[in-house]
Amino acid sequence: MFLRTSIVAVVASLALAAGCSSPKKSDAAEKPDASGARAAGAEDARPIKKKQPDKPWTTAFGEKAALVGDEVTIEGPPGLLEHVLVLQNSEFFTHEERATPDGFLQLTAVKPDVGGAPPIRLRIDAWTIDAMVSVRVLERPGEVPVVVQVSGEAWYKPLAGDGEQRSAVLRFVGQRP
Image 1 (cartoon, rainbow, N blue to C red):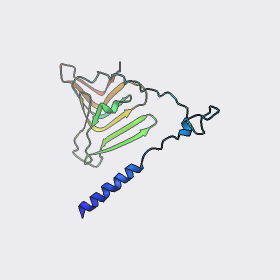
Image 2 (image 1 turned 120 degrees about the vertical axis):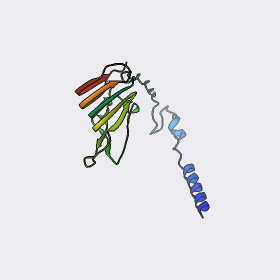
Image 3 (image 1 turned 30 degrees about the vertical axis):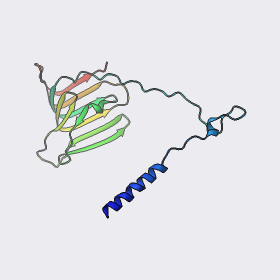
Image 4 (image 1 turned 180 degrees about the vertical axis):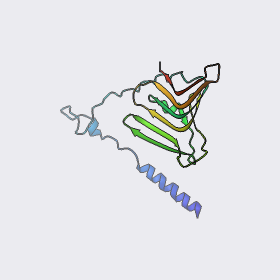
Protein backbone atom coordinates (compact mmCIF):
# COMPACT_ATOMS: atom_id res chain seq x y z
CA MET A 1 0.00 0.00 0.00
CA PHE A 2 2.79 2.43 0.94
CA LEU A 3 4.71 1.63 -2.25
CA ARG A 4 1.64 2.24 -4.42
CA THR A 5 0.98 5.61 -2.68
CA SER A 6 4.62 6.62 -3.16
CA ILE A 7 4.53 5.76 -6.86
CA VAL A 8 1.32 7.75 -7.34
CA ALA A 9 2.87 10.73 -5.53
CA VAL A 10 6.02 10.60 -7.69
CA VAL A 11 4.04 10.34 -10.93
CA ALA A 12 1.80 13.25 -9.88
CA SER A 13 4.86 15.37 -9.01
CA LEU A 14 6.46 14.66 -12.37
CA ALA A 15 3.26 15.53 -14.20
CA LEU A 16 3.01 18.83 -12.33
CA ALA A 17 6.66 19.66 -12.96
CA ALA A 18 6.28 18.98 -16.68
CA GLY A 19 3.33 21.36 -16.92
CA CYS A 20 4.97 24.13 -14.87
CA SER A 21 7.29 25.78 -17.33
CA SER A 22 7.64 29.50 -17.76
CA PRO A 23 5.80 30.99 -20.73
CA LYS A 24 7.96 31.79 -23.72
CA LYS A 25 7.67 35.00 -25.70
CA SER A 26 5.86 34.52 -28.93
CA ASP A 27 7.73 35.05 -32.16
CA ALA A 28 5.39 37.96 -32.92
CA ALA A 29 6.50 39.78 -29.79
CA GLU A 30 10.18 39.37 -30.65
CA LYS A 31 10.09 40.12 -34.39
CA PRO A 32 9.23 43.56 -35.75
CA ASP A 33 6.35 43.84 -38.20
CA ALA A 34 6.63 45.29 -41.72
CA SER A 35 6.80 48.85 -40.35
CA GLY A 36 9.70 47.90 -38.08
CA ALA A 37 7.65 48.20 -34.87
CA ARG A 38 7.46 45.43 -32.35
CA ALA A 39 4.19 43.79 -31.43
CA ALA A 40 2.21 45.14 -28.49
CA GLY A 41 3.54 43.96 -25.15
CA ALA A 42 7.10 43.46 -26.41
CA GLU A 43 9.68 44.74 -23.97
CA ASP A 44 12.75 46.66 -24.98
CA ALA A 45 16.00 44.94 -24.16
CA ARG A 46 17.56 46.72 -21.20
CA PRO A 47 21.09 46.14 -20.05
CA ILE A 48 21.26 44.07 -16.89
CA LYS A 49 23.10 45.83 -14.11
CA LYS A 50 25.81 43.60 -12.78
CA LYS A 51 25.97 43.08 -9.04
CA GLN A 52 28.76 45.04 -7.45
CA PRO A 53 31.30 42.88 -5.64
CA ASP A 54 30.89 42.88 -1.88
CA LYS A 55 33.19 45.20 -0.01
CA PRO A 56 35.80 43.50 2.16
CA TRP A 57 34.66 42.88 5.73
CA THR A 58 36.17 44.67 8.70
CA THR A 59 39.06 42.97 10.48
CA ALA A 60 38.22 44.61 13.84
CA PHE A 61 36.66 41.41 15.21
CA GLY A 62 39.16 38.95 13.77
CA GLU A 63 41.29 38.40 16.89
CA LYS A 64 39.79 36.13 19.56
CA ALA A 65 38.20 38.02 22.43
CA ALA A 66 35.52 37.56 25.07
CA LEU A 67 32.83 40.04 26.09
CA VAL A 68 30.20 39.86 28.82
CA GLY A 69 27.39 42.28 29.60
CA ASP A 70 23.69 42.59 30.25
CA GLU A 71 22.61 43.97 26.88
CA VAL A 72 24.40 43.55 23.55
CA THR A 73 23.68 45.56 20.41
CA ILE A 74 25.32 44.82 17.07
CA GLU A 75 24.62 46.96 14.01
CA GLY A 76 26.18 46.87 10.59
CA PRO A 77 25.86 46.91 6.80
CA PRO A 78 24.40 44.27 4.49
CA GLY A 79 26.20 40.97 5.10
CA LEU A 80 26.30 41.45 8.88
CA LEU A 81 24.11 38.40 9.50
CA GLU A 82 26.71 36.23 7.74
CA HIS A 83 29.17 37.17 10.50
CA VAL A 84 26.87 37.01 13.55
CA LEU A 85 25.57 33.84 15.19
CA VAL A 86 23.12 33.94 18.09
CA LEU A 87 22.50 30.58 19.76
CA GLN A 88 18.82 29.80 20.24
CA ASN A 89 17.23 28.02 23.19
CA SER A 90 13.44 28.31 23.25
CA GLU A 91 13.32 26.98 26.81
CA PHE A 92 15.08 30.07 28.15
CA PHE A 93 14.96 32.75 25.40
CA THR A 94 12.47 34.54 23.19
CA HIS A 95 13.56 35.23 19.62
CA GLU A 96 11.98 37.63 17.16
CA GLU A 97 12.93 38.66 13.62
CA ARG A 98 11.32 41.45 11.63
CA ALA A 99 11.91 44.04 8.97
CA THR A 100 11.91 47.61 10.26
CA PRO A 101 12.44 50.99 8.57
CA ASP A 102 16.02 50.86 9.91
CA GLY A 103 16.79 47.38 8.52
CA PHE A 104 16.38 43.70 9.43
CA LEU A 105 16.18 43.26 13.20
CA GLN A 106 16.79 40.16 15.33
CA LEU A 107 15.90 40.34 19.02
CA THR A 108 16.75 37.64 21.54
CA ALA A 109 15.95 38.02 25.23
CA VAL A 110 15.87 35.92 28.37
CA LYS A 111 12.27 34.97 29.17
CA PRO A 112 11.09 37.01 32.17
CA ASP A 113 9.51 34.06 33.98
CA VAL A 114 12.55 31.75 33.76
CA GLY A 115 14.96 31.66 36.67
CA GLY A 116 18.54 30.48 36.34
CA ALA A 117 18.72 30.98 32.58
CA PRO A 118 22.15 30.69 31.00
CA PRO A 119 23.56 33.73 29.18
CA ILE A 120 22.65 34.28 25.55
CA ARG A 121 25.77 33.20 23.67
CA LEU A 122 26.65 34.87 20.38
CA ARG A 123 29.59 35.29 18.09
CA ILE A 124 30.74 37.92 15.67
CA ASP A 125 33.69 36.66 13.67
CA ALA A 126 36.26 35.52 16.30
CA TRP A 127 34.63 37.28 19.27
CA THR A 128 32.48 35.35 21.75
CA ILE A 129 29.90 37.39 23.64
CA ASP A 130 27.63 36.48 26.56
CA ALA A 131 24.55 38.63 27.14
CA MET A 132 22.75 38.21 30.45
CA VAL A 133 19.50 39.96 29.41
CA SER A 134 19.14 40.63 25.66
CA VAL A 135 20.74 40.76 22.23
CA ARG A 136 19.76 43.12 19.41
CA VAL A 137 21.24 42.59 15.92
CA LEU A 138 20.35 45.12 13.20
CA GLU A 139 21.49 44.69 9.60
CA ARG A 140 21.12 48.16 8.04
CA PRO A 141 20.51 48.60 4.31
CA GLY A 142 23.27 51.15 3.66
CA GLU A 143 27.01 51.36 4.08
CA VAL A 144 27.57 51.83 7.82
CA PRO A 145 30.34 50.71 10.18
CA VAL A 146 29.99 47.57 12.27
CA VAL A 147 29.24 48.57 15.86
CA VAL A 148 29.29 46.22 18.86
CA GLN A 149 28.03 47.75 22.08
CA VAL A 150 27.84 45.93 25.41
CA SER A 151 26.18 47.62 28.38
CA GLY A 152 25.54 46.79 32.02
CA GLU A 153 28.68 45.73 33.89
CA ALA A 154 30.45 45.21 30.56
CA TRP A 155 33.73 43.32 30.44
CA TYR A 156 36.12 42.78 27.49
CA LYS A 157 39.24 40.64 27.32
CA PRO A 158 41.29 39.83 24.22
CA LEU A 159 42.58 36.27 24.41
CA ALA A 160 46.04 37.35 23.27
CA GLY A 161 47.80 40.00 25.31
CA ASP A 162 46.63 42.48 27.88
CA GLY A 163 43.84 44.90 27.31
CA GLU A 164 41.08 43.95 29.69
CA GLN A 165 38.38 46.61 29.95
CA ARG A 166 35.49 47.09 32.38
CA SER A 167 32.84 49.78 32.13
CA ALA A 168 29.10 50.43 32.25
CA VAL A 169 29.19 50.61 28.43
CA LEU A 170 31.82 49.30 26.02
CA ARG A 171 31.60 50.23 22.33
CA PHE A 172 33.70 48.83 19.49
CA VAL A 173 33.55 50.10 15.90
CA GLY A 174 34.89 48.27 12.87
CA GLN A 175 35.17 50.19 9.59
CA ARG A 176 35.15 48.35 6.30
CA PRO A 177 38.05 49.20 4.01
